[in-house]
Length: 272
Image (cartoon, rainbow, N blue to C red; front, top):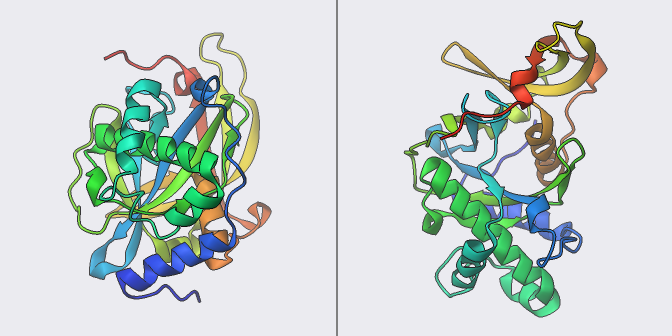
């Protein structure tokens, strides 16, 4: 049984303290040449029913690649716009300036402080575009270690945030709906499964590519089932390990959930 602090203030302090113990390595990207290869996302938390913390995710719409997947709000850097927004973030009022570790980062990790502002600006802008997240309503809790996507040749920089007041979000065309997963359910072993993923090439009508087993989390809400797997699952696993020292069960001990994918999963999205 894992003890989740009951009040918002104590929960935020708890998360910040745990991340302070394991600050990420220096940001490896070069602002003059690597911005096209990186993405920034918000690992977004907020109060759910009874004030208990939930993980807030987007479900990707059919108009984008990887439709149906659960993902954190965020995306690629827009250098000119996000650099401008990053300067705004360093002013007294915005989320980054209210972060308790901001002074330490400005003093001891000056180069990373500038990059952190750029990443947070990107994630907040994307959050506003995708779900009308109020950037001024987000409390920044800290950065997580980067997640490298070999298949897409990109690196994801996750940033943990808490949204205390906003309850309604308004998804744009990229997002089918908003999914809230109680943090307590992510700490229950019975909610994990093994995703058995097979891929069929529908362009050539060839045989299925041999399946691959991956861990996943099964979220059930009002009779509907959502699967959390892939890169967002790995980010969630890292968060749970850092904050609660929790490790999900080994994949070979879990019940199997089959997933069939085809070319449309990684194909060209609908142009808008």
